Length: 257
Ligand SMILES: Nc1ncnc2c1ncn2[C@@H]1O[C@H](COP(=O)(O)OP(=O)(O)O)[C@@H](O)[C@H]1O
Ligand SMILES: [Mg+2]
Image (cartoon, rainbow, N blue to C red; front, side, top):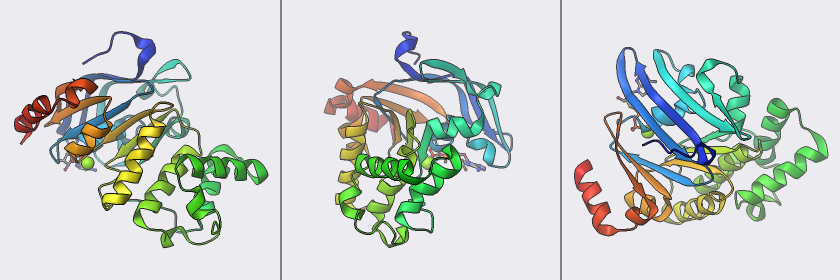
């Protein structure tokens, strides 16, 4: 599905194909993701969701044996960038298109250094400006009140849900325009999952958010638009109204499993 009004598009792929060691994982995909909305991708395990998400900030290139053809156009600061043409440097792309992974991957360092180190390395920001940006990102991630009195303690001492919110804060502190989240609550319990979902909902009006979800109930709660994948192909796109219609969702589930 390709949206026609380009000013409302954050990411658009054109005939995107991705292979690993010659095996095609994403197949000739042309799809658009709207700006400042929460898009959810669902599909069976192995259908290529993570691979697709990684193509939006060129992370597949960090893996051996991957080949990408076709285009990914990412609109940043109102300007569309053909990201595989090499015009926008990878570090800048990955800062502006932040990613949060399935398993929280905090740095084995203090809570504060999880944000201060990326700020220093990616943006050369240190001192009081770095500290105020850190506080802002931790507040955005709904974590500040839980950690403000122990910023110097190890991040690995936090609960799983807190660690995942720290990973979200670590992406946010670089002030991205697009947030990619790959099954961000897959390893969390019910309460931590709800906290993450509330957080994503609150961020989604200001940021373009693309979330891979393993849960249909979560997709139903969150999605402004739902993309259903099967074997590397987009088989269905549903609007928010359709997602909230149980009969439509039931049909979608039946087509998938
Ligand atoms: N780094 C990799 N090297 C080789 N094959 C990979 C790699 N990453 C993913 N794949 C393959 O791509 C297919 C899709 O994987 P993935 O994108 O992780 O699917 P999903 O996220 O939908 O479960 C799988 O068959 C997987 O084995
Ligand atoms: Mg995956």
